[in-house]
Length: 152
Image (cartoon, rainbow, N blue to C red; front, side):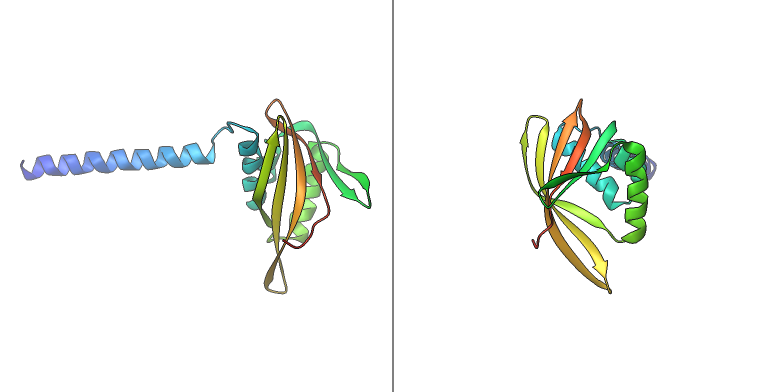
């Protein structure tokens, strides 16, 4: 094999690897969820990037954000627009907020998740865990109910 042929093969292989890498990255970035837990993971990835629009594309228009406090269910937000405003305020107050799924169990369109939320206070990272229940409708998150946080 002459030098010119080797150079052409090397260029071709480089192009194939580059295209494969870009395709793989694109498929991970814009992958369509294949199940309910994937949808929640997409939502949480957007949360961790503070990408509110990315969070909202995983939700129904009338998504409910609920909290349980003192044995009472509190409606935090009742639709996407309210959730968008709440998340803007949340990320402004907690610019380093991020979360991860520690464990989950799925039953039909209901997914119970133990989430570990991380924040930074006085240059020190802290975390706490909470149980959250996600309800999905037609593959989108229709409600999230958070329960009181506790030490992980």
